Picture 1 (tube, rainbow, N blue to C red):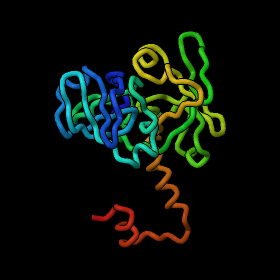
Picture 2 (cartoon, helix red, strand yellow):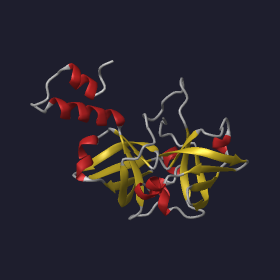
Picture 3 (spheres, helix red, strand yellow):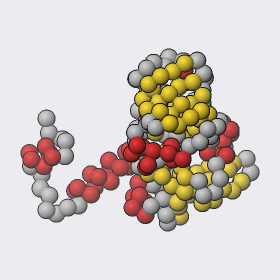
Picture 4 (tube, rainbow, N blue to C red):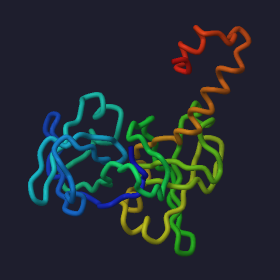
Length: 211
């Protein structure tokens, strides 16, 4: 579990088979083999680390369904160590399980802010609300504007300067994870609106509510 508050921008050293090697320094504090690290919002397991470098294992399906498969040496990625019990949650709860990728369709400067617009599938519209949370490339962001199948976020100050999103170009893909609470609520409402479903012990067992 993560918060979406990026701790460091890492640099890709290599991607060979299932091994993704990243140059970094700050997140190595308190890092151990087997720990989880968010890389552009994707939860990966650390299998090796040396001073200034970590290696994570990436499954083929992850490379196919996220933007990690397109990474090249010297590309930058957002890094965050896993949340510890008792830590402050300055962003929002991010699982590191990507729902899909989205294309950047617009970038616009507005005073000190940079507005970034992504195009999301219509099937995901139910999971986004204005002023709600969304994780883009692992960054916890607030949705500033909604327009049919487009979501706009505003990058300012620290977030603009200390994440990789501001440097991405129109047409590039970003990893998107929609708000977990929104997905749970949508699921519960979807279940309750089915007239054929009746409350019973088997119903509770099926949906994980019974002991």
